[in-house]
Image (tube, rainbow, N blue to C red; front, side, top):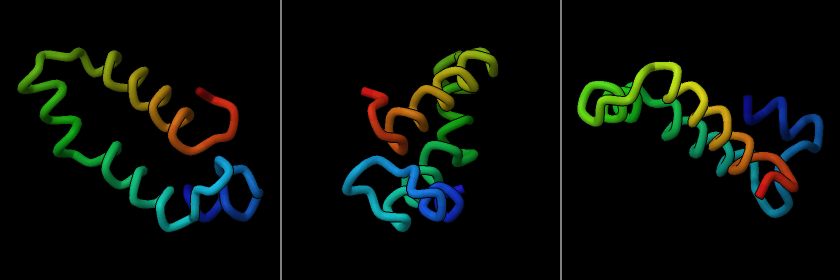
Length: 64
């Protein structure tokens, strides 16, 4: 995903492809999913919505 966004020049200003890959790796990790759903009681749909918003804000320009 990071490589494709970089190829399209779609990453937020100043964000490198490697940094984007790191953010994607962390946010989409099974550990984060488990913490939020199993330990914190989030519904899977809530996690999915949070993940989409978080990835947009972290990776794309003008997503504040």
